[in-house]
Image (tube, rainbow, N blue to C red; front, side, top):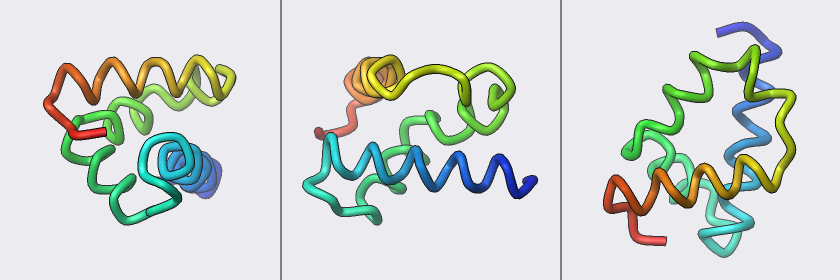
Length: 71
């Protein structure tokens, strides 16, 4: 994983924690990993890093619901 992708994923964890888990970054990380969103965003970094926060949050919400993650 490149430094750019790592920094992006830290940002993804932060917005996930803030939006869905009352700031709990560990819960956010686990949800991202368990739902497959982590892998999706790492593999599609070239596209997803340019999308806005709201788009990502909406996409995460859909994936969490689809994969049974309690949010």
